[in-house]
Amino acid sequence: MSRLSASVDDWQGHTFSRLAALPEEAEPSERAQLLAAQFVGTEIIHLGHDTAALDLLLQFEAALQTFAEGNSAAVAARTRGRILAICDALADHRAYFDTGPSA
Image (cartoon, rainbow, N blue to C red; front, side):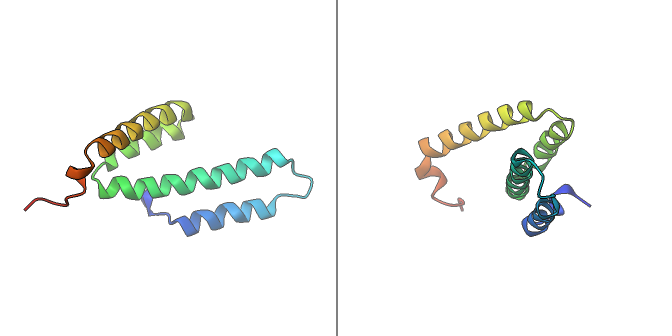
């Protein structure tokens, strides 16, 4: 089963179940960590579907592997840079990208 086969609803259900299972004595930081995991996981699922649609799945899987190895800072820096570069190119060449596929 691919990591991308998870749905947002499944992930949110999983993380909210874990949040609900925390004992009342749990520290606020523990709750914050679970909410952060829920947010990051949801965004990873969305990004995974986007990269699959853009035929960038291999690069995304490599980034996920780095993340799974515990190097989230490297993934965040690399991903942030790439997303900013894409956003800049889209903004600079909006007319081209908004025309749709060429015939």
